[in-house]
Length: 218
Figure (tube, rainbow, N blue to C red):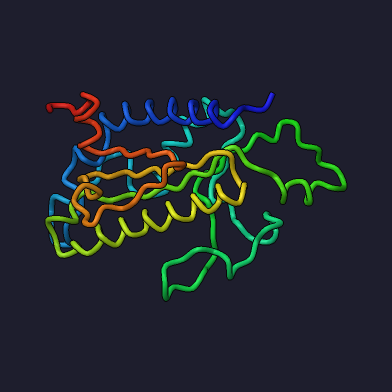
């Protein structure tokens, strides 16, 4: 039986709550981070070494809510979407549209008919959820890479706009943005980004942990 958008959102939130509990234990906020090549204390921790690790950790929790329905790096192009046109992809002024892929897609294909019309049916499918992921690393504010945090926050803003666009086109029932914000860069950024009301906000970081009473030693 297909889930409603509300039920999908509830399951996404349940998976996120478990991720946040785990992040309190091993999140990058607990470690030195990475400041510069000559810093002997550079260390992100034992769990998250890349943005792909951020994706992996959420996928492990999503699979518990959506068994065999979680996919990574789903390419959005004319092979996967009937409504694809490169020139229509929303990008910042002066930037050219490039290859587009969704970091995490939840799609229940348990009742999908792999028949002679499979490609047509798939290209017209409305997937359960599109999720984009960004990692804002700890250590940027103390080193020569201070420009990285604002740049990555702008990328979060771009992803939010595109997720809202996917929702508007009916490509997914729900959309979410997950940010691993190891030193609360989102709070420091000015002007603050505008978070679309129809895109779920999933942020793990010290400020969120403190708000929920999960900040160890806090």
